[in-house]
Image (tube, rainbow over all chains, first blue to last red; front, side, top):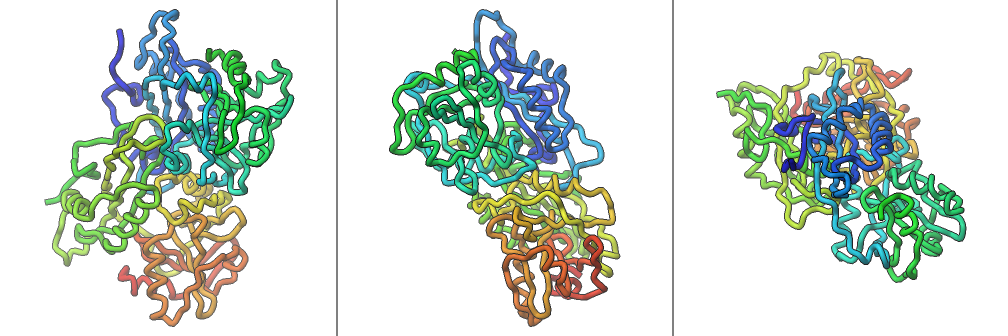
Amino acid sequence: MYHTHTYLINGDFNQSISPLDRGFTYGDGVFRTMVMRSGLPVNWPLHYQKLVADCAAIGIVCPSAELLMSDFLQLFSIEDIDSEKQEVAKIIVTRGEGERGYKPPAVTTPTRVIIRSAMPQYSKDYYVAGVQLHVCNTRLASQVKLAGVKHLNRIENILARMEWRDESIFDGVLLDQQGGVIECTMSNIFARFDKVLVTPDLSECGVSGITRQRICDLSSTLNLTVEVTQLSLSRMMQADELIICNSLYGAFQVAKIGDKTWGQQSLAKTFRNLLAYD
Amino acid sequence: MYHTHTYLINGDFNQSISPLDRGFTYGDGVFRTMVMRSGLPVNWPLHYQKLVADCAAIGIVCPSAELLMSDFLQLFSIEDIDSEKQEVAKIIVTRGEGERGYKPPAVTTPTRVIIRSAMPQYSKDYYVAGVQLHVCNTRLASQVKLAGVKHLNRIENILARMEWRDESIFDGVLLDQQGGVIECTMSNIFARFDKVLVTPDLSECGVSGITRQRICDLSSTLNLTVEVTQLSLSRMMQADELIICNSLYGAFQVAKIGDKTWGQQSLAKTFRNLLAYD
């Protein structure tokens, strides 16, 4: 059996979103994007843990893991595990419907949406030579109360993504207001300097993805020390290796930013292997 | 004839919002809130001008004024002009539906929503004695590309509004990252020092409302000079008079912030009169 639906709202194929939903009126919610393999979410415990944390950051009650798992079972087909069929699931959780005004209702029923889509077709080049990045003019605002959270207020990422049309550019580097490197529009970033793997501190802005967390956790197996710290653009450009990561592609080597190029290297491939993306 | 519908989506009473609408997935849109008097929008030219400017700020094609006016005619009833019946209209314009990912589709059809609601019932005290404000801990992030724009990324306002439950508090003062006064969660702010009316500069954050603009334009008739500048919280607390404004209530005198109180004064009433809110 293979469902043709592309989304499920509160466990129902026939529901839609009310224009009074606070996700629509205020971006009052959070989201997750993950690979579905053979109809099941990959790295689900980490994704769910992050969803719970992000909901808590803005005071939304997170739907239970059981409820979300039953949604996955409705929307995706569990095929033969050996098929290795991969798709993408996006979970959106909003505070639910409300009256006009920023004040949340005394009692809210969160809206949960699961959207099913095809796995992006990444160029083979990305896996071998690496990807090219643009450095965005749009800079991230500092907001300690929302830093790290994957919330639905994403106009900054959109403005940054609208800066380039060149299809050879895979992602854009986002700087903070002081010009420090934070992340890319849809990826986190790691710069290797000898045996030290530096990733930007996200305590003021940015989204802390679970693949970033997994890479931090796995680095010691490669005898790399992780430093979560400030990283200027000029220092990043001098890295021995640069890699970016997210939950869909795992990790890619950065081959080019502006005029600067890096030769063919293997850190991203090594991490894809450790992360079970190959 | 009196419609019972509370909203209209793309001119249709039976439409709903797709969970793929970028307004829902990313807060990728803008909005306006205005008084409808006898079924017609008050200060429509200014509201429409601001809607066009805000759409342009994030690269959305604004629906035509004719289209929006025909929406108003469908959703609201034009009653006897003498009835003075007042309601509230909220216009939301999003970039429209899109695939997963921040990049906007090559061709987008904006989604336009008009939501009809009852006029808030403001306490008579607000008109006579004035209102009480809370100073929010949540501070506004600086983002020059979005400053002034009434976009749908409003989690900051929500977190700020969630800071108080005391119903005697009308609104909350929002400071920027440096502690300068910017606005309130749903209002702009003016501080009078003798013959000078100071309102915070909104070039880094905040929403520049049309009532703020109208008050700036009207001040000369009261022999007041307007200064748009930085305003520290401590300086604001020493103002001779403090007023807040928005399109629904016009202007209210601020009577109390924390332990500081201001005696009964008349600037807000004078502006309500000039703004035709009384």
